[in-house]
Structure formats: structure tokens, C-alpha cells
Image (cartoon, rainbow, N blue to C red):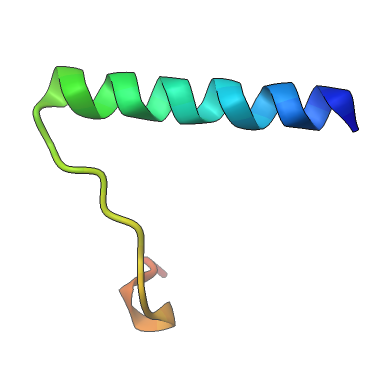
Length: 37
């Protein structure tokens, strides 16, 4: 429970930082066809 809640927050922070440093927008797939094989 609590470990997963912390893990989710850590992942969100890490992803936000990576996208900021790479100067790329954070885009989530909206369709299964956008997922790589």
C-alpha cells in the first residue's frame, strides 16, 4: 500500500524531470495502436 503510493509519486517526479531536461512534452498514449511492438 504505502510503498506503492510513494513509488507512484517518485515515478511522476522522475518523469516530469526527464521531460523538462529533454525539453519534450509528456504525452501519454490514447490508443493501443500507439504502443510500440
